[in-house]
Length: 263
Image 1 (spheres, rainbow, N blue to C red):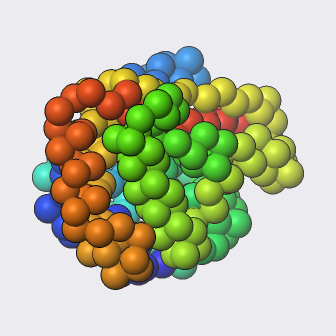
Image 2: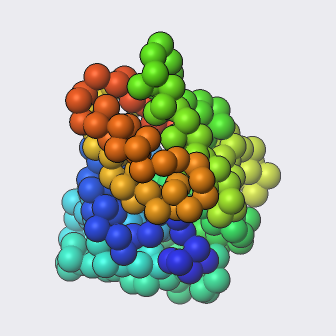
């Protein structure tokens, strides 16, 4: 998968705002699971599709001087400034490139697999990179499970928000995203031979970060929405004004987190 295949191109200026909003929304959830798995001193970790720097930096803080964190992505421009010490940043395509020539105690990917054309190849690569007893932790959204931006659709601003969110989902699906992928993670881990598989989910609603994420995302995909006839300039401007007014109860798609241990 090339960066040009990805709807939310990380080279766009809105990407940094999206990464910050995603970190505010989901980092506490992700880090809680890291701690539950026992991530700590001397662990060796691989963060796949790192995007922004917050998750690999948190890993590095937990593993300490005796550990190692490898953060990879097809575009490392947002992660590279965090490199140093135990944190290495490397360009890598998990669907095409060979796995790193080492084994890890923890491999983690958040909001990555749902976008990939060859999700099965990526999953195999990540499992192959684990040491026996190592943990794979995958986190992906499931937009089909809860497709509405405004679950409480009581007025025209909410209906407009949901129409634009539906347009976003159409664009994602056209690029090959599996909008029902998150719910499949526990089964896929079991079928891949992982042990002690567990999963849970997180569904943010009415967080200020949801509004920041929504505004940045709509700006990011404005041209695609217009080109596909999924929205007009007037509708986009009206929706962004509604978001800025702070009167919409905005939600994200549920985040499904699943984890399993390599026997």
